[in-house]
Image (cartoon, rainbow, N blue to C red):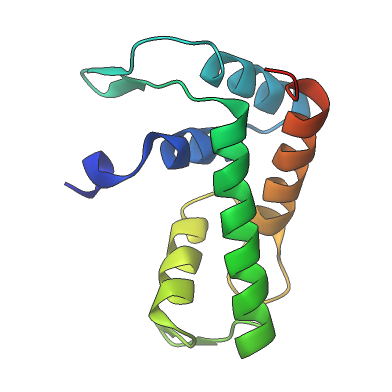
Length: 128
């Protein structure tokens, strides 16, 4: 279903964000940037991409986050529903699937993870 519809770069980014240490994030990026055939074997997907394509995705997500933050201010939860546009709400629901403490506006761990990953790609994989 939805899993098959997500672009490979998004799946790779989610996997990298789930790594607990900077070293493990770097290793996951290195594996993702190793050229290969993308295929699925049971419950495991083998995906590869380029640093440029992953950077484009990260920059797009950061831009959308910033625009939504400027337009709506801090995200506030109302029961089970979130305020904000459908795009931003959907993005935050996806972000909730990644490591982090919540959507109360005080934790920006996913946002900060994206910035850290962007900086890691820029410093370690810029010439690939």
